[in-house]
Length: 91
Image (cartoon, rainbow, N blue to C red; front, side, top):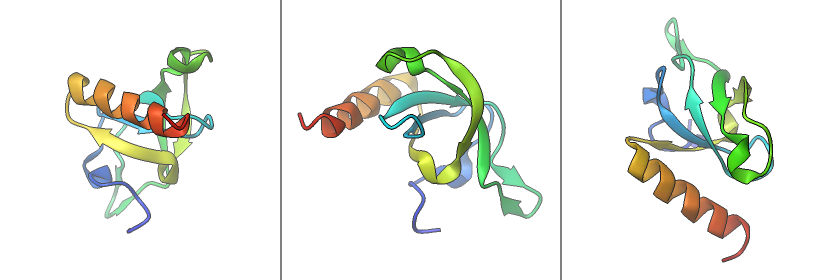
């Protein structure tokens, strides 16, 4: 489980996430819990905010390995996303 980001085991519906399935860090909202029976899912349904990076907003599945951050509130969500974007573009 070392390959996953910190706090991923606490993802439930409505959790604010940063994902990289589009190639750039993108904000997303979990639409389901990551817990499945006694284990964890490998794929999670999310509402991806692609319009923040020039794509369309979409709902769909994302591999858990593509989740790079789990945020507690909207302020942290914006700060973490901004930092990830700056890292991505080398700023």
